[in-house]
Length: 121
Image (cartoon, rainbow, N blue to C red; front, side, top):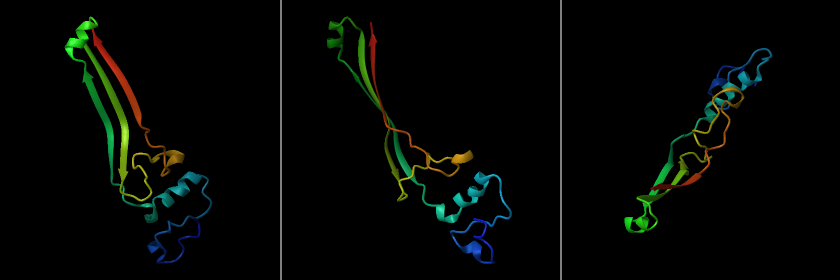
């Protein structure tokens, strides 16, 4: 990284980052310009299906046989679908933005399912 930007015109190279002088003790700081270089910038458009909830209320005729006033079942799902405009399938919300993880990919939120029962006596 120290020798990548030395002559006038090097700044037009999309792979180049600003030149560094001397030895930087903080290696994390040295990689920040590299992650911010034009070659790492791409479309970040995306769409997600984050929350879906489906509730079924059991008919009153069946509920009253069980000595209940209401009975319902709910199925909830989170993070079911993600579409990204970039060819790398990178989730723009799953990128590190601080410390050692700055600019690094993180694990996207996994799909989760929840089943619930609501009964009123």
